[in-house]
Amino acid sequence: MLTKEYLNECLTYEPNTGKFIWKKRPLKHFKHGYNSWARWNKCWANKQTGYVNQKGYVEIRINYNKYYAHRL
Image 1 (cartoon, rainbow, N blue to C red):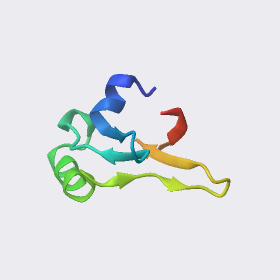
Image 2 (tube, rainbow, N blue to C red):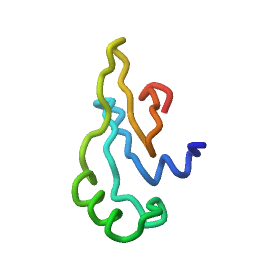
Image 3 (cartoon, rainbow, N blue to C red):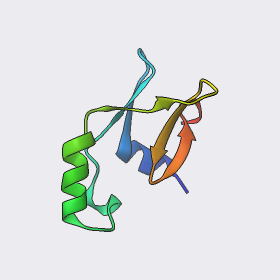
Image 4 (cartoon, rainbow, N blue to C red):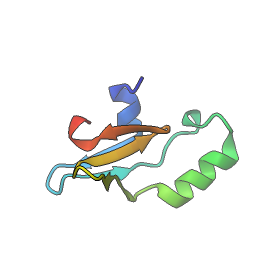
């Protein structure tokens, strides 16, 4: 289950633009250890997340689960 604390460790919300930005995530979020953590943060930290689905909603994937941006 996604908690507010976990979400705040993962994402930053920019209310002026409505965009979600990945934060540099802590090592404890990665069960496969340091290499997964380092690779993920190098590729995705400080980048915008989310995509528009076929129905026009913005979806964000966190830990292989989809969430609608307007619900987050």
